[in-house]
Length: 286
Image (cartoon, rainbow, N blue to C red):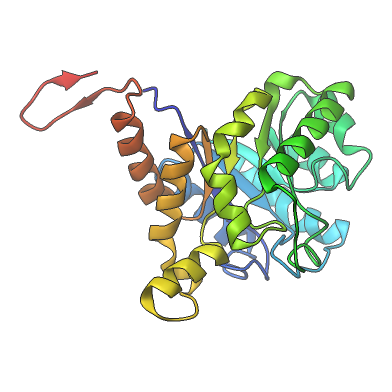
């Protein structure tokens, strides 16, 4: 079935992620959670052992390896979903690829580790380049841009050129504008509103708004409160995903796979993507 989108389920093997930190630190719990996301329709399982929330502290190499390697290896033997490793460390990426990962999701866009591009190129895996202003500990300290969309586009264009120069196949690169990574609410909304301007770069666009604080602030304003908790941001996540899909995004990184996939399927059908289904009492349509 052609839907025009892929869903990337978030598997945080961390004690301090902003939404589900600590829930899946145990490898067994992380694997079961990931398999549940796969059953709900996740095309990709994005396994990360270092939080990138605002203010997050770095994690030592050995600790990150210990968190993610057994999870990736177990998932590779138990699901057909594609496995992504969310890391900026080349040695973690190499170990995860050896264990079965086929995507490297680098929030630093190959800037943190000079060996990362070679690891990706040599393995021939897919690569996600993410825009982030600064680094997690400082990225939300008064982020400023003359034009956020122009700045993000120029950054991703330069990082894509660098990756290709280092031997990464352009056909295997996806680009993420980094919603919430060094952006205000207005920056995030402007990026979603003008997301189609990133399509000129020629790569699939990844969007990651799931449960993020700007959604809580917007929903809170509508309710007359300061914000709503992370667990109550599903509606905002779905709204932002559908709008981003309409503007050209094709990969959606989410905590809540089933409802996000349902919403995107309806959006895809409405926008005319080829699909087949059987309506109860009716006939297959396409």
